[in-house]
Image (cartoon, rainbow, N blue to C red; front, top):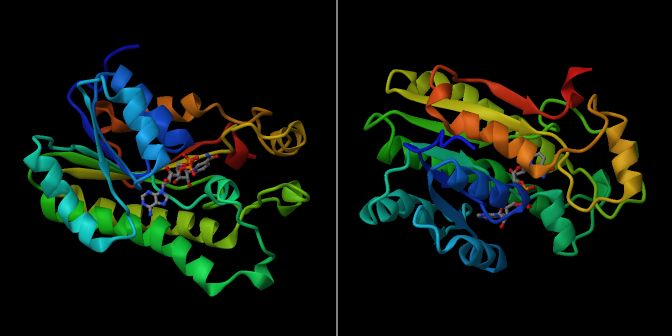
Length: 263
Ligand SMILES: NC(=O)c1ccc[n+]([C@@H]2O[C@H](COP(=O)([O-])OP(=O)(O)OC[C@H]3O[C@@H](n4cnc5c(N)ncnc54)[C@H](O)[C@@H]3O)[C@@H](O)[C@H]2O)c1
């Protein structure tokens, strides 16, 4: 692999998940300095044990739902000698996360306000808080890139039938936050352009993570490529978005979904 990220210091939220871990591995292999963050707990510990021996890896606990922690994070990172020129808003409450926590997926009519608000708080407000702090601590000091993470369910609705009898479902707050995060991208891209920073959205498709054959068949029929993505197929596009080569790209949504959104 070419070391296309040698001059990049990449700050990532929620980096211990299915995609986050793959991003970290791929970015380190491409020569980036990675500043990984996640909630305290097993995911962060697993990241540290996998990458602790790599001099280009550093880890901080960070809850994107906590405004006070976010206000301090880039100052802490700078005090330790790191100057992120790429920030990746990757943390989210996802279906995978809820399924792993044993949560149910109620019908829309039974969706609680609490669950709705929590998803908005982490997936959308968390991204806003990170972007606001980037505006304060980074933007204008040197060229930088913000990458917001949406989903194939941001600007396209789910085919609800494919979730029948599955242990997980798509949920309304998730889609709403993923559409909203692209609104943040569009608003900020023009706002930051004169200060030399770019903002783009990546919209991953359905990523394989031990899904049943039945689910793979159902979702595969909706995807031009006919199958779910491997995490690395998303991570390789992420490498380009993090690279200097993406410097003239701003205000865009990049769909990496095997053609799901292209029919
Ligand atoms: N996997 C997919 O199929 C897929 C598809 C489209 C979009 N995405 C998006 O990609 C991103 C990564 O997804 P993933 O598949 O790795 O999900 P995942 O559920 O495996 O990981 C999500 C990560 O976010 C972290 N997180 C949750 N709440 C947090 C908080 N309050 N503060 C900090 N971190 C928090 C979790 O600890 C976890 O490490 C998410 O934004 C997700 O919505 C994933």
